[in-house]
Length: 250
Picture 1 (cartoon, rainbow, N blue to C red):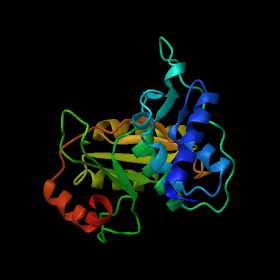
Picture 2: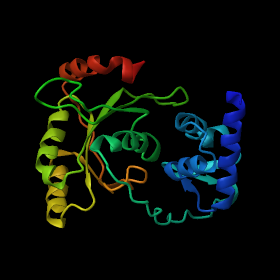
Picture 3: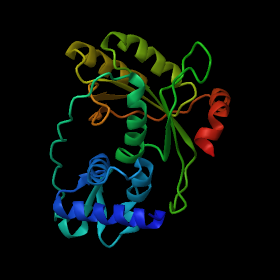
């Protein structure tokens, strides 16, 4: 089937699904339901077809909040709070790397903190200070009236609740070259550990996100605290971004 016909089918299905859900669907939910409808659809093709659905159909779709799509016909006088996230199915043999791309997509499409994000990890930076699991950039779009500078956002993801102290230390190290940093930890972490991390992240301006480490399909990322923006050392920003220039800036 021709690519333009595939994207049209995806967009038509997206509108059909939004018709059935008056409260709207988050990007990840819409993506998942379209994949379930036709497994032959390529994930990247779905992403490219729906991530700007409100811009493609401005007379039909709007975003009541970041990452949430809703038909204009269902727009209430006062926006209602969205319902609970769907319960994810169990997944076995899970690796930490399985969560890198889902978080990159969430960072881009759900909270829109970046315009582009890529999974990284694997000691890409080749030094003892570590490599972020996800790196993204935020740049002004052509349609933006007010243009801003390019911002770098990094994230450290940990599935092992015994490695939270190490993860926090790594997240701190990324602040030297990043405008924003997120620490992403399992929601099943102990209440004491989460309370301590919450306090530390507030002190250091690091964003704190929890997730369901049992399933990469529906990680249910939730913000405990948003990352605070700061000015990194541009020497280190340029040093590390040069190592991933093709992946992040091409």
